[in-house]
Image (tube, rainbow, N blue to C red; front, side, top):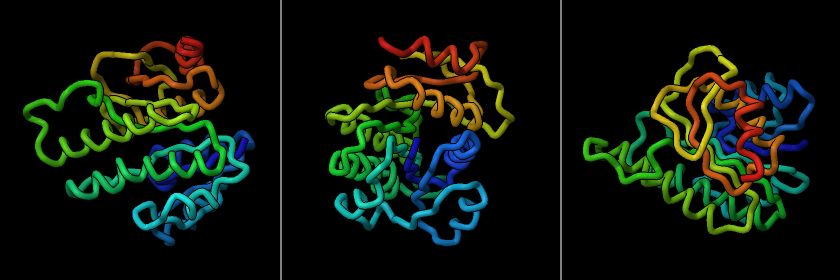
Length: 219
């Protein structure tokens, strides 16, 4: 399998890339900062310098031929303001989805956030509210496209070691999930194409990942 990952230097994305290359898949990682290329190369990932905030869809599509799937794992990150929540978390996903349509890449995984299925809470704050708004808008755009998309909405992310066990479904209770387990679920979703056109919430739990993903296929 050849997979293209946007935001490939992020914590979830790097773990995801290592899992894929470890089993023999080919991964191209889109990054904004050329200095991140060394880290990706050490993971066995082919770095591609491509700033989603400055590219057009046609140029980005040029990096996608031959890909079996694309994964949107980019984000403006902590410390960024409301404007970049929109230009990265929303517009970046829209751009990658549009490029996939141009390049004929049908499988698309989007890392979103728990909380997008409801209105923002009153105490969300301006920046976090903008983040949720951007993720919600990115989901809405993706739903309207003729792609085999799956939206993954993790709970509160932690850097604890992988547990290999989760709760995955249309709606699950708010809880934590390790970034390593999110990465493993993304790999499992790639292996279960019948999870396409689903939006799934994810937290840590008691069900082995492969079993949890299999249970959501074909709904």
